[in-house]
Amino acid sequence: MTRVPVIRLNDGNAIPQIGFGVYKVDAGNAERVVSEALEAGYRHFDTAALYGNEAEVGRALRASGIPREELFVTTKQWFDRQEPAEAERAIAESMEKLDLGYIDLYLLHWPAPKRDRYVGAWQALERFKLDGLTRSIGVSNFLVPHLERLARESATVPAVNQIELHPAYQQRDVVAYCRANGIAVEAWGPLGQGKYDLFGEEPVVVAAKAHGVTPAQVVLRWHLQLGNIPLPKSGNPSRMRENIDVLGFDLTLAEIDAITALERGGRGGPHPDEQN
Ligand code: NAD
Image 1 (cartoon, helix red, strand yellow):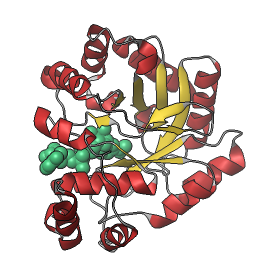
Image 2 (tube, rainbow, N blue to C red):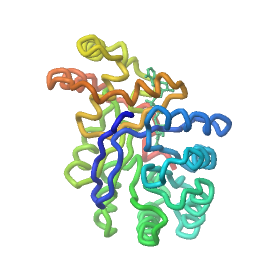
Image 3 (cartoon, helix red, strand yellow):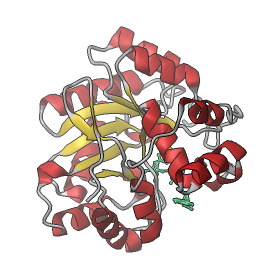
């Protein structure tokens, strides 16, 4: 069984450094996909209320018989539920669907700054943590001004910020802020979501050949060596195994630098200020 390293969060909790993403895994397939991912060795799962598969993810995790404390489950509050009473309903719904006793990591999915409600929503998450509904709390798609505002107006630094991050779009300003302030960085779209031809890029192909691994494994290894927490997604069991089998080689600094030079400066997803 692959032993994925853990990262210590700023609240003392530990998170496995590779997570399995279930965005666009429809409810009809989610139970099977999660069971196969467990079989492949994943113990960290990343879902969201928006994905519509929390109940199936929870069912597959419960059916596995794996002790709850060996699993790490993230879910997220959609941005139209940031009002305090609505936030309480949102986490109650997620908890009921997952039915795992508690959530490991609960995130604000997007800041939605035009609504101007994310500070209050964050304070609601602080209460959910105190009440034991979730062990850790964090944010997703927060840019530096959003993080700075939380730092000014709340008492808790997010444990993580989950952002779009891959060699072609690295958000270096956000990552630098997170590293400087003890916020762990989770990478969504870690393989570029198929929107960039990362696997055909020369530094990726050359490193894959040098280490006898696949281009996807090189990209995931790049994330791990930089300290990111990648959340690759695949519905295909052999790719699930491939994406977690990334612990047996090390990229050289020169290889890492060559892959880092693939930055192209364009996001694949929405701009966080525009997702409202
Ligand atoms: P990804 O970069 O993981 O790309 C997934 C696609 O890459 C798959 O559909 C598959 O076609 C391909 N792929 C996977 N493994 C491969 C391999 N070994 N070889 C070749 N191709 C392979 O992108 P994603 O699924 O969008 O992101 C991963 C996870 O991040 C999501 O499932 C979700 O949990 C999370 N996410 C979060 C947000 C957010 O706003 N917080 C947004 C998008 C995704």
